Length: 165
Image 1 (cartoon, rainbow, N blue to C red):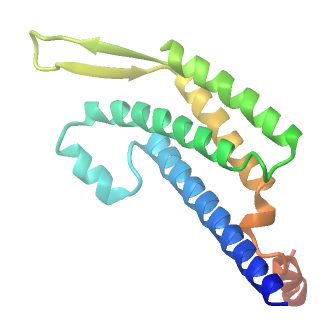
Image 2 (cartoon, rainbow, N blue to C red):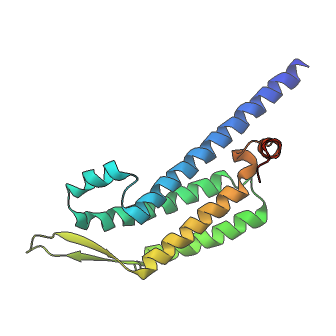
Image 3 (cartoon, helix red, strand yellow):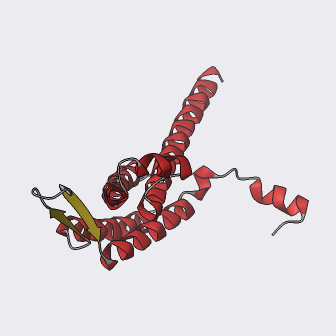
């Protein structure tokens, strides 16, 4: 009986660690997504970025996309045993393709001018925004695939009791 309790508490700790790890990874991905689309997470950050010049925002967006891809890779590998093989394989293929496109450098252009005022400038093209949209869809799909550990099982019952859909 005591061994069962210890085993149960170890499993609870493990489940809690996984839930926290997944939640934090998804939160980091969401922050990167906000930076990709807005160049910042909130207005305060935007105002702070303006001090360094508006031309720096695309560089932040580009770096945010790189960080989002890295975080997705970590999340995907950490949840490999939690999601189904089909869900993992589908996400892995999409993420590998998106990483390949990003790494190709076709979604942006870096302009350097040592003689003028602008030392380095990043220009994002339409492919960057297609990548951003695809990453957003992948994040949404990951949340759906991980809902069984992210959300309480009785949430649906609570909604039914309140009369919500």
